Length: 116
Image (cartoon, rainbow, N blue to C red; front, top):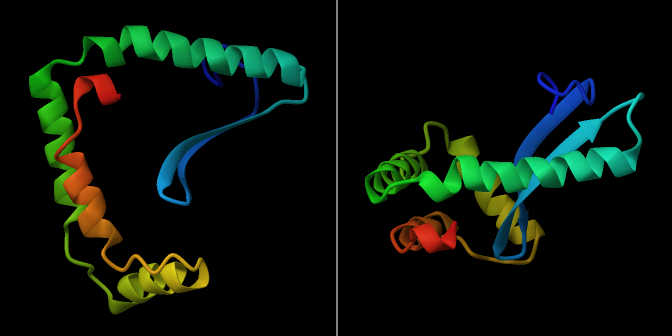
C-alpha cells in the first residue's frame, strides 16, 4: 500500500486486543488520497492477500507457523517487568485472565486452515 501503490506516507499494521478477540489493525495516512479510496485499497489488499497467500498455505506451512508462534509465545519472560506489565494490564482492564498466554497457546494448537 505504501511502496507499490504509494497511497500514503504512513502505513502500519498491528494486532489489537478487544475483549477475548485479537484484531488486525491497519493504518494508512495520506495527504493525497481520499479516505474512501484508501478504504477500498485496504479491502482490495485483504482480498488479494487471502487468495495470494492464505489460500495457498499447506498443512506443513501452517504447522510451522503455529510452532513458531508457540515458541515465541511460550518463551519465559526475560524481565520481571514484562510479566508485571502483562498482569497489570489484566487487572486494569478488569479481565483477570492471568493465564492468557497459556490459553492463547492452547488455542493455537487447534488452528486449522479454515480458521485463517
